[in-house]
Structure formats: C-alpha cells, structure tokens
Image (cartoon, rainbow, N blue to C red):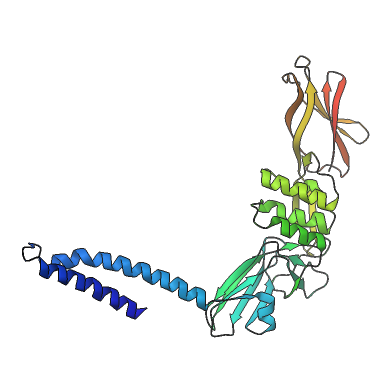
Length: 323
C-alpha cells in the first residue's frame, strides 16, 4: 500500500512539473500550484487507502461460529447471566486465541442453559456477532428470552452453558422472523405462547408486520388469535419467580348499525352480571361499524368476561375476553 501511495504522489508531481515546464508564461508561482494540487492528491490517496484497507480486512478476517470456535479452541468465552430473563440478558466475555482477526457469529436459536436446573433456559431469537482483534478480547450482551416461565429468573453472574434449542416450533418461528421488522415488545410473549402455552392475546401488535407475526404464532400453536390484546405486567419476586397480571383489555369491536338507534356497551362477568355500562353513542349506518375498545382490568378476578354491544335493550353482538 505504501508503494502505491508513493507512486501516486510521484505521478501527480511529474504531471505538474511537465505542465509547468511546458508553460513559460504561467503567472502562478510554483507554491500556489502545489497548494491547489495537494488536496486532490490527498483525496485520491485517502479514498484508495480506505478501499485497500477494506479489501485487506475482508481477506484477513475469519468468520467463525461461536460453538465451533469454542470447540476448536480458537476462542475461549465466559457466558454469564446479568440477572434478567428477557431482552439483553446474556453477557459474553470472549477471548481470541489466534493471531487472526475473528468475526464470531452467534446464531439465532442459541440456547443458554443455567447451571441451576431450577432457573430458566434463555433462547436467542436473532443472530448477533462480535469482532475480535488478533489475540484480543471483547464483551457483548446478547438478547435472549425465557423459555420456561415456571422456573426462576437466572441469578445475576451465574454461568450459562451454550446449547441450541431443539423446540421445533420455536425454530420455525425464528426462521419466520428473519429479516422482518417485528416489534421487540412481542418477542417474549411469542416465545411463551410456544413454550409455555401462554395466551396469544398477550402478544402486543400495533403495526402490520407484528400483527402478521402474531397471526403466524397463533397458527403455529393452534390457538385463537383473539379480537383483543391483554398486555401483562410482569414482576419478579424475591425468589426469582415471574408473576404476571393483566392490566388492560383493548381491541376493536365490529358490529352492524342502522345509524338511527343509539348504542352502548355493557361489560359483564361470566354469569351475565353487568359490571359497567358505557354512555350511549350514535354510530353511522354501516353493516360493519368499527369501534375502539379499552378497559382497565388491574385487580379484577381471573376469569371469563364479555362485552355486549346493545341497541337499546337489544343485544347486537357480544365479545368474549379473559382476564
């Protein structure tokens, strides 16, 4: 690269001198000519330097898989919990044992097994990587998600063993997710829908891509993709157990309206006892009116409930939901 640098400078210098000697009537001093020429030379050389640096790096950087590199002892690694069960939850401290730069790829589907069988196994949904200098070291925190909600949250600074998930449906979901901009708010509840049989309604989806993802998980698990969403409030107690509570029910109510008779909603429990009655409203005439529905249910008893859309005393439609 240094030879090419000198060659370019020499060639640019020769070009100037040849031109300057051939023009006996040029009024610009030599120093001014060089000032105007040097920035161009610097730009050309800088661009070539960047290009050649990229080419050189791409030729010398070796792509390796985390598990394979550990097995071949190209790297060594400590895989540690940071005390979380979801999101950025696994710390990797990786050392390069070779004289080459390594790009260590950490594939989706990697599973992190706790030393304590009473704690949760975490699963990685998206691939990640870390680049290590020759004989260098680095740290990375991996996003991984609990696949055993009934077990305890991994203890902070406890060790993980690297593995790979063998859950067929989880692997199918991971394959579906690749390259899609799915809201990360949906990740943990989607995993639990597969591994723990949790409700599809817990998966929050506001954009089309995430709604399609929720529909895919419903089909994959054979569960109903309900008309409503039931976001959960998750809390980890002093023993590491994850406790959840439904805090709100929201969705869209779709029903016919004659555009004349006022309507209202009634929320009832499973026995039909009315718990709440809304004010009346006058929707436009339509065979398919769409109305946004939302009710806070924090503190409600776990069980079945319903929303009745009423036209006076006449029930137009009912929508079932669970808390």
